[in-house]
Image (cartoon, rainbow, N blue to C red; front, top):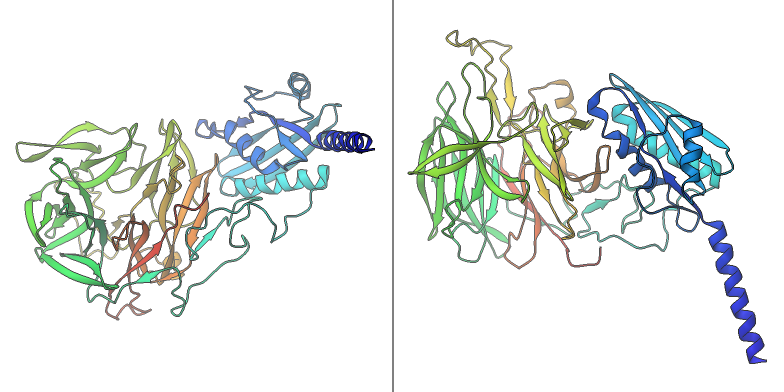
Length: 535
């Protein structure tokens, strides 16, 4: 009797397993044909990658492993032959045609019995990702009757890290601790999951969180137009350690840190201009025994610290001011020789790059070059081919330089009402939060209605910090903070309170009101990050 029951259960399990296997259909996605400018050839593999992710339905519609089809398919007959060479039930192939900013998407779903179902869309390059998501949903709904994802399911959750971070706003089919349809706004009363400093009686242009004196505890350095303040978190407040007062005619632009001579003490690099002509007058500070010291000043270079490929080690880079234009051609690695900072190797950067506006975003064995230009992010390949531009405003700041595009010797009328300015972007911060080699770009997303109409209006009333990743076609939001009131000036991933855990630290300048007459002050906000929970 027991033997008969065991045999019956075995047969039932075998039948159930076979039925599940029969129900699960498999597919492959071929490279897409790209008809358009050479700069969009990356879509040949980018579109299949996105479609494969969005078409996958575990237990029902699953991709075959491996790169089975190497080239785009020219016609139906070639598609049939390609599908027959695999063990898949379905083949997805097609093309994208690009003219200027317009885009025509043609997707074909071919079954092994020879039946093909077309899906087409007319869109723009900026809306290509949403169009692909719509097409994937349409295929799943029309062909496989896949139901719409329910808001709450017992599925694996991603590590939210902090309750003030909103996850998976654009991730198709992935559940997080928060519902992906929710959008949250912060309130002054809601302080859970974040720390907020007292209001500091000065403006801000940049921030560092670093152990500059190598004493085992981090300091917080805040820079305004002429001054650098050193703080340390004590008893849940920022305690002032020292103040460096620079020249009142100087204008500080950005602040970075690097132990360039490997002596254990971190140098603080400040890009600055001085005088009516805004000539570079950068400086290097050190901080030891609770005091600032000037290591070198009046340096005729603009500074930045960037993690350079292939090892992505923090490196000091610089650029000279141009003659009759804002920047001299070329951004260079800098070395210190005989007490002077000298240009060494020139970086191979895409168009519109300057010393202030680029970062490298690692992608496995490759990388993307992100350039912040005119308040938008431009994504370039490692060979400097243009791949995408964000539609949303990112990295906008109020730090500006006069945009001098004149004939040498002719000068410029600074009383001209049409005087143009070059606005420096906020920090572009590539980071690897999950410690698994997956890098994201941390960047500020300012929110202001007035700035949409007035290009020189830079008093942003609120903003968000976004974490973006490259999905093969564009930059998508991985997570973001709730709205933060004020202008987001700078940010870091660092241990601001020296408790051994990293935080997202944001330096905020308070909003001066619609008239711009209220006094601007500084607040530091920190979001503890749980990087240890399972991802």
